[in-house]
Length: 464
Image 1: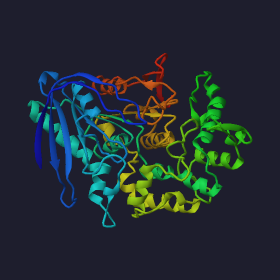
Image 2: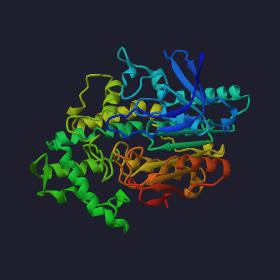
Image 3: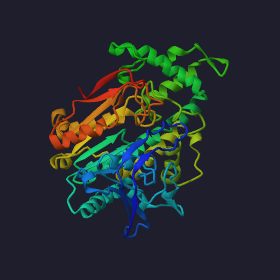
């Protein structure tokens, strides 16, 4: 183990923009802090893991809380100099922490394969071990830095970060008193492989619709199902209530890049199959599809599979970096799905519904998931919540420690550029979790504001 400390002056921070993603707002008046980097290894894992702990330098600026932060895609956490999660944590008076799990950042999963063999040490880090290490080491660093004990410990994350939070509740139930785990990437194998379902559908249906064509189906679905909740606001409140069939658009004309296109039955059938989700050749349901109203442009591009599942298949499931996901058929898709779940569910599914130890320890788990999530099907999270309900004996008992909020019209992790429904007010979810943990006030609703900022609402937890 090695330790390195760097003093940071604090101040006002602006963040570089990323094409296609919303600009992070500036964070001003951040107090001076200290970054302590702890490098650890695990016997036999052939790894080098960095854990970054950011601590307000003045003990008067510390609120006694520890906040571990999660990652996205194949990043276990953000350790950059301009890490929004860590700077936000320090601004809020927390000791913040992140881990790289010893793996590469971004969408690169090549670390998983070494000389044709799975790097099980790094996969174990990414799946569960490194967040636990971060919790143990991060709190110890805070205790020694301030010469007093962390009073409350929290975890916050979305997507991969959400999965990490669920892993903690299941595998290390005493690490955190509060876990905020949004749009969680649980059931990793099922939803990742399911994201490649469109490639098999297009091949079998022999179609290659443009994104403009696909968008016409969502527009029509929203128009048909928006009024179901009694309010016409351009949002499908509950996509599970929307029974609109894509075949109703057959024969309609749409204009794409100046060209008039007539919607065919084959394209409509493909859209219905993508919405329904993957099935085996015999018709057995394998996983959920994306909700009506959620964008197709990430996971339904003909001949261009989304990179995260494509990398998972290449470097883990098939162990073949040359594997071509664009050639999938219904048969080979099912084979791939089965192979993935058999090989890796025990490591990274994070779907154990028995949260009794977490509940008995007093832990609280809060999750929100957008009903227009275009990357992780919302129903996967609902499915897990139902399994917890069945395992632990009813909603009332489960509501005591685990609450799920479904946000109409909100996309993956709630990006304003792609969401049409009300977004949770910035920081309101963590505030609700803190009040639940420290004051016993279980959140019935989360405050939300429309993307244009003109209307406010309260989102009730599921089920209501």
